[in-house]
Structures are given as structure tokens and as C-alpha cells.
Image 1 (cartoon, helix red, strand yellow):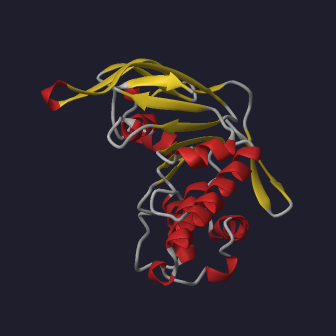
Image 2 (image 1 turned 90 degrees about the horizontal axis):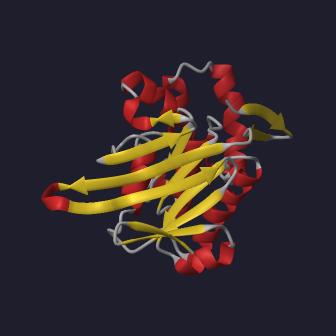
Length: 237
């Protein structure tokens, strides 16, 4: 389990040494024998920052979905924090997902809820006390640069701000693993870089970060490890 502490105004995740993710000869086949992934193996250590690149439809999103159990492999094993995801029933999968922050390209915010409410509703559902929710909310808002907009609604925000709300919602529970599926896909270069800088800061606090993207220029700017999905296979770049 990660050790949680507070340094200044920022919640910090200290991950213990070891492997966060292991894929062993993983294949994913859909109808009509379409191979999204074919005999893929991968290891990601705790505290690593990894980009997964590839063309649209190459299997990047499928790979990410298997890490939080939204998809199961046709063959092979997906191990997350020493847990074989395919063996989990509903309750076990729910517990695993509490330890994973997930950020989507299309934000998935609730229009009728404010920024603060969008960030904290998951904590409420998990039974956190009001005091603990408030303790976590302010430093999270500060981290993503939205403290002054806590009472705004999603339609009052720019696309970049909405994505930062999505990130805040994913990290407010200080999960040791962050997964982001094309988080900059709808953003201009300036907003894209702001989003990546947030992920890099979270990684510096100890979180393991995995981001799928087709933005090769952004990847080159960051100098983090990269794997490419092509024809269902993984290639180190």
C-alpha cells in the first residue's frame, strides 16, 4: 500500500519500490478475429512515467482499459500492483479502481455539478467524512490551478480547465497509479503542456503515470520512456 503524507499544501504519494504493472503475453481479440493486441508483454515500475503512442485504433485505449478492468484479455495476464485483474469480482475490482486515477479525453464531468462537486463526489460515495473531503479538496484545486473556480459549472470553463477538473477528480484520493487516455486530444498546445506539467508534478510526488497519446511532438518534448502500439504489438522507442 502507498504511504500518504502531506507536504505543505500538497498531498503526496510515496510509492514503495517494485513493479506496478505487468502484462504477460496479453492478446485481445474482438469479433471477426480482429486483434487489438497480440502477445504483448510490458513491465512498468512504481514511480515510472510512461507514454503509449500509436495511431488511432491501434489498441492504446484497449491496453489502458485492461489495466482497470474495463476490458479483459482474451489470453495472457494483466497484473496491477501484484493483483491479476481478471480474477477480481465486482467488489475486488471496485477496491482496485479506488487505487487508480483515470482521466479521459472527453472529461466526463457532470454538467449540473460545480467544479468542487465534480471533484469530491467520488470521495462522498466512498464514505469519506466531510472534514476529510474538505482537507483534500483545497490542495487538489491549487495543484490544478482552479482554486478560484471551485463554484463554477463545467459549461463556464474552457476545455483546458475542464480537463484539469477531470485530473483533479482522478487525483483527489491520492491514488498511486494514474492512467490518462489521450488527455490532450481536444486541447491546444498551450493547454496540452499545462496538463502534462500537472502529470509530471504528480509523478515527482511518487505516482506512477501512464498516458496514451498520438501527439509525437509532445512526447519528444517530455523525454519520458515511450512504447508504441503498432499492428497489435508493443515496441520500445
